[in-house]
Image 1 (cartoon, rainbow, N blue to C red):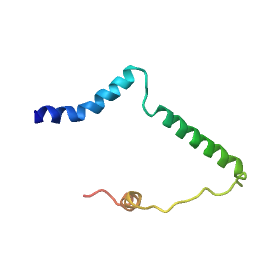
Image 2 (image 1 turned 60 degrees about the vertical axis):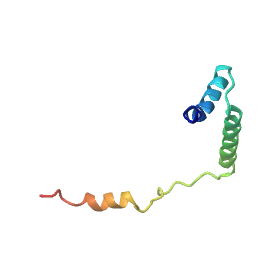
Image 3 (image 1 turned 180 degrees about the vertical axis):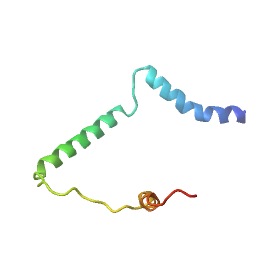
Image 4 (image 1 turned 120 degrees about the horizontal axis):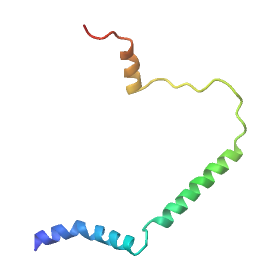
Amino acid sequence: MIAVAAFLLPVVPLLALLAFLLFGRYPGCEAIVRLSERIAARRDHGRAALAPRQPGWPPTRAASGGLLLAFALSGRAPPA
């Protein structure tokens, strides 16, 4: 009896999701649409508020983490 319950416990959510998909219901679809609309509205609103950028030097970043290690090792010759 315990083995059957241990098997069915993880299978029940999978079967429920499969049943929803078979009947044409997509759980979370509305939430995904609302989120994508919110992101698109924020992106469009942010672009309208920004002034056009002046041409200039591109921004530079200091090497850090793995990139710093790669730069340090790139100048060494291969081992003999």
